[in-house]
Figure 1 (cartoon, rainbow, N blue to C red):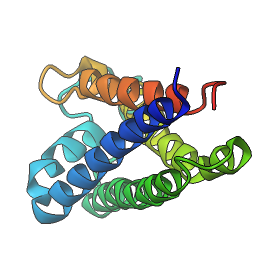
Figure 2: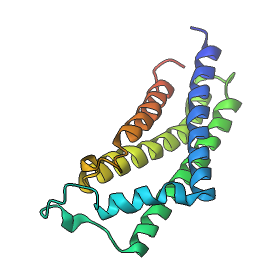
Figure 3: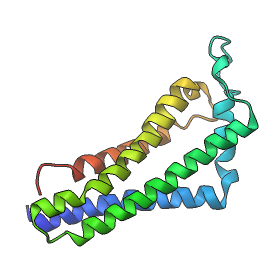
Length: 164
């Protein structure tokens, strides 16, 4: 396969994920009410089965809920910034020698990893399991998070492939 085509393909994947995080962060910054109820209900566990054995995990304090939402948005913004830095670095080395181009991947790899942590660890593991989001008929974001993890994970695998 032509090295430039492979590198452009990888760059396109990173651009896609960078744009995704940019739009998600922008949406949460300009319309926080769009996702705020989701975070509130997941943390409060108020639409789960109500099993008393798990309800001690619920976070109902509005200040702590706002803090969690703020941290999610901060991570989305940071991830977008890191990914765009990765895009620029990758773009600058499209025609560079292999070691130079491979070294330029570090920011993109870091950004993709942050994205995996947010949606894999944050939404699927912590939201889904710790806060029993899977039990909610209304506020279950695991399917969407899994789609995001798939997009990010495939991009990370493609970027870190063995060829050039």
